[in-house]
Image (tube, rainbow, N blue to C red; front, side, top):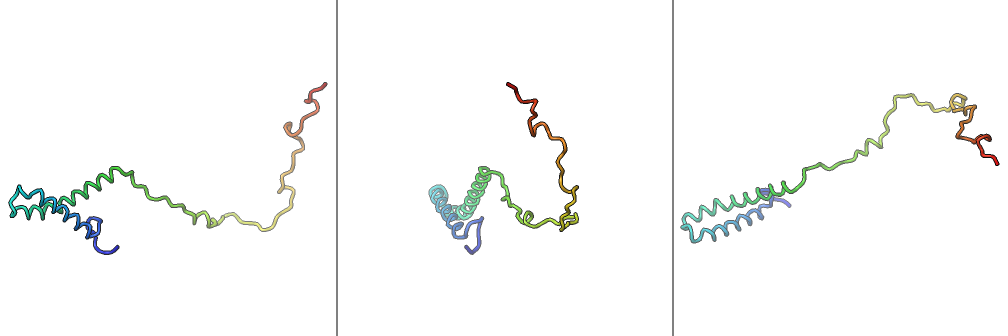
Length: 121
């Protein structure tokens, strides 16, 4: 939507609101004030009332809404790019006996039950 904005609204909506306030004020001041005083009052008070309504509505909206929290963005680019390593990499595998874990010569007691621990008849 193009065009200038007045108080965040399109110009035509702001003008319509001011005209409605002017008509209401004209009706309210009809019998109470002389016509020479009524015209300047309506011209000054109509935009003032429209501004006051916008300020009050904004204050109520801010009071009823929660605190502003920016949307959380996940950084997927950090998890997909590999991190360069400072350790030297080896491409060949060594078959030395020290490289593979060797089983211990003594078995743990939880691995196999001993014959003396079994109940007899």
